Image (cartoon, rainbow, N blue to C red; front, side, top):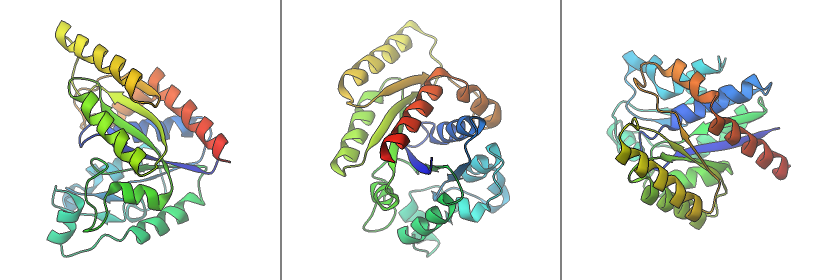
Length: 245
């Protein structure tokens, strides 16, 4: 296959790590050699590094790569990458991330690369997440919310990616809250309907709501990896990889 995908989000906390892990696990179970990266992560305390997104991705597919290769830039302060790097008097170098990605990609059939925050989150003074995606030359899966507010954030993200001529494989909508009331069900249904009409890309989901995240990360990933939306996402990704060969 020899292909990679960048998983970005419409915002922080929309489920990027969950989708990245579930997709990686699903593809691994299909017999592919899968590598993972979380190039930049903030809010990582040394005493709790094992609970970071990068560590969770590493653990879920039982990767033998070092945590430093999976996440070249890790910062303690839970703020945007640019601010976190400034706080530690460090600089994020996109070329360094690109070199690590290339080294890893030679070892695997498929690379899953999880972004940080949304597409316009600043990484350096002159670059944001879209510039990182362009550097890696990857297509994108966008993860967004299935409920109220999901339409605006999703369409803005898709528009930003199109402006940079970044290919979008799919928009995956995730339930970040339980959908119990009649009103929340209407909000979710109309969000899906409008996005399927207006997004201009395949719209998948909603993924099942996973309560108790991130404390029950592994069972949540296993559940999502078996969902119809995730299986359809894997099919779209494999189809995209075949077209690019």
